[in-house]
Image 1 (cartoon, rainbow, N blue to C red):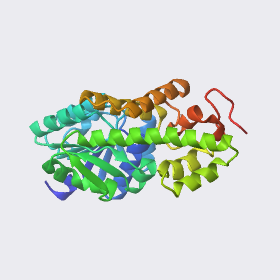
Image 2 (image 1 turned 60 degrees about the vertical axis):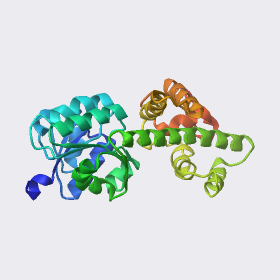
Image 3 (image 1 turned 180 degrees about the vertical axis):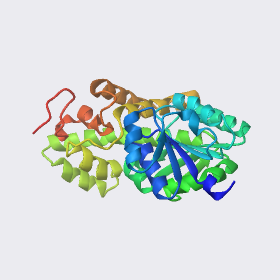
Image 4 (image 1 turned 90 degrees about the vertical axis):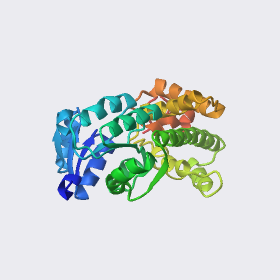
Amino acid sequence: MNEPQNRRVAVIGLGAMGGAMAATLHQAGWDVTGFDPSEAARTAAEKSGIGTTDSLSRLAGIPYAVLSLPAAGIVETTVPQLLAEPGTTAIIDTTTSEPATSKRMAELAEIHGAAFIDAPVSGGRDGAATGTLSAFVGATDSALAAAEPVLLALTGGNYSHIGGPGSGNVVKLLNNVLAAANLASVGEALGVAKAYGIDPATAAASISGASGGSKVSANMYPNWVLTGSHDSGFSMGLMARDAALAVDVAEQIGEKPALLVTVANQWQEALAALGPKADFTEIARAVAPAITPAGAPGSTPAA
């Protein structure tokens, strides 16, 4: 394959993450074509100079494809369409998907002479926009080698090869359920601090420099919760889904992580109260409403 062909890439899913990844690849010199069923998403991508199509079938056989999709079921219907024509070198699935789905898609791609890797990412829309995402990679060595040119453009080399197909999804789900637990526990702790008369921002800063500190206490709460902005760009629905999936994966192999089960249930309760489109940092409104100007679910935000 010649170099221009090798630098053709399709990005499937042009939401907050997919759109930013498409822009990053475009800026890095890749010939990008984006697809999303949403006309608004396609229009936003076109404003960044990215060519788009309203038909997924037109992307069959493009050498590289990046998936940024909301669920494993959509991955399963998308990959066969991309493999319907010869020419695919590698499919890089950045979706937080299900391990069994990734295993099946890797097997299907291999039958078609292509590579499929599960590479769910962390770093949010800012990381996607700057090519500094981190990725949890599940793939054979040969599949990773085939996908690496695109993976490097998206992560700058900041990825971990966890193991075979599906393993990237497992570790990403565990990462997310741990983040979910931390978001709830930090909120509860800062709620206690406020009830004692301590400024939650002061408490968060102090904790962040000590053994209980984390990205949640150092960044998420100061930037998105204590300000009441709750505009991280990642939804309550997706985090509740990921926490539940992490528990499901554990149960499938006979593990019973009691704390993580409690966390997953807590997020389901918050989901019911706030709705799937709420920002995931709004978990604080459920566990410690006094610390955020947004207030408890159903309340009027503070002026």
